[in-house]
Each structure stands twice: as structure tokens, then as C-alpha cells.
Length: 143
Ligand SMILES: [Zn+2]
View 1 (cartoon, rainbow, N blue to C red):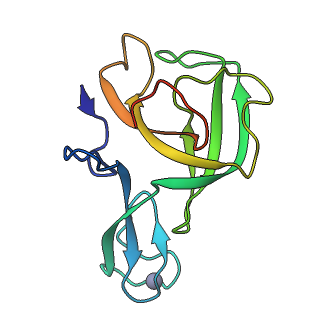
View 2 (cartoon, protein in one colour; view 1 turned 45 degrees about the vertical axis):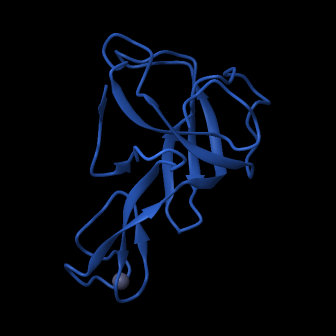
């Protein structure tokens, strides 16, 4: 297994520590972005961004079910946007253990980050990435 984007995702090895995303925060205006970018999109200063840990939790902004999958992925699958408490709204897939059907997700619900293979396929099962799952529901996914 390898982390697909180690620059964007921190997977700690210490027991009890939870994974998180790595974003940037502007030292001047406090704007937080994900993924990282060298220029602040808010105040346009260059080279003033610092790395911060974000995204351990979030709130489901919107979701849909995709019935088409590109090569190496399976369908149907949830596609979601999550609002992070630090500011960014990000695209994500949903972790395993949840049936892909209407009524499972509800916009506004609390989500939490998990680290899982990108897809359960030969092409992507060895590549770890971040996904989100409903925070309050049990599932078989690694936390
Ligand atoms: Zn700024």
C-alpha cells in the first residue's frame, strides 16, 4: 500500500492519532486552501502560505450518485462535496461500508475522514487516499 498523495494527506503511525489532510493557510489573511497553492487566492500574496492540518471532520454540503465509472473504478458510487470547518469545500468519495443508494447520506450531516484504497479494483486497491464517511455511523472502514 502506498499513499497516493503524501503531500496532501498525513497518515500518522502513532496509536490513537487520526489522519488528516494537509492544506495551506495564508500567514497574512488566514485564508485556508486545499490542495496547497503557493499564492493566496484571497489576498494574492505569493510564498506566504504555511502548511496546516485540516479536514479531520466536515459537513456534507452536497452529494450525488454516479452510475458511470471510469476504468479502474466501480459504479454506482457516491460523489460528495464536504465543507471543512477550516474553510475549504472539497470533492471526495465516500468510504466503504455504506450502501450506495438514496437516503444513506443527508446534506448537512457530520462527516469524518478515513483512509482507504482509492478503489476496490486491481488498478487502485494498493493506493491509499482520503475519503469521508458519516461521522455517526459504524462501518468497516479503517479510521
Ligand atoms: Zn491571504
